Image (cartoon, rainbow, N blue to C red):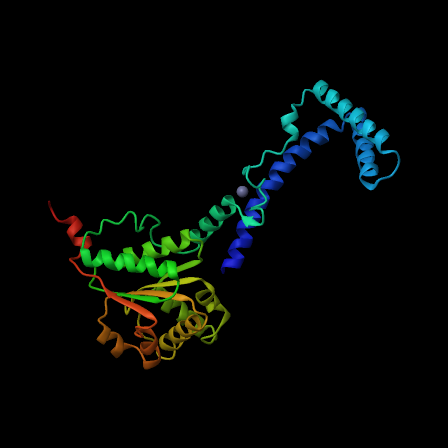
Length: 303
Ligand SMILES: [Zn+2]
């Protein structure tokens, strides 16, 4: 889903809260309208209010009528045992009364819902893999972390993270994904392996490299591809589809972040020139190698 669709869905959720709050009030009103006296007074009040608003008749007399009817309704309410608060919709968000907007700006509740949907649909491996939670201590790696966060903020360059297995590439990629999602960007996290499987399925389904199935890969604000190089290269599929995604995203000035265990030289050998020239163009891609031991092994080492 693209950001517009996610926002629509978030808005529907906030709207449904408002409907629920207002429905509760309607139910109480229905109950009160069982009483003929209430129903009649309510009808007369509405009609007097309309006349007053439209400027029909004597304004002073109408104002008196409105006041008298309001008083009558309030007394009837007291008699009915219904608390006045029950006639006030209990909105979940007091800031926007569950409309999602305050002064034309997105309310916090709508933003929260949007972020929740982004993360839910993002496929990020772990929502706790964040810049704040990181236990990285290596000076070089910390500088890379800082730069990655900066690029997330600027939204300008692509990122290619290299390094051996277990140097924390997937962690950093996830941290970038979680951070972007928190900033309200739509995010899609995939492994190169699963992406290739999707490419192959689309190809076997008779769709070409620009098919609608792949729109999502181009629509999303930030695409993150983990473990480039672990996918099997399928003739007529991997290179064509990957190039298309890369190219379309770059034309749309949308970021794409990768991790890979491959050396840059291996990338040049493995992928065709069209992909390599885009991927390794340092004016458009920040390339960094994470240093260090295998963190996953280190964790299990006896102290
Ligand atoms: Zn709100």
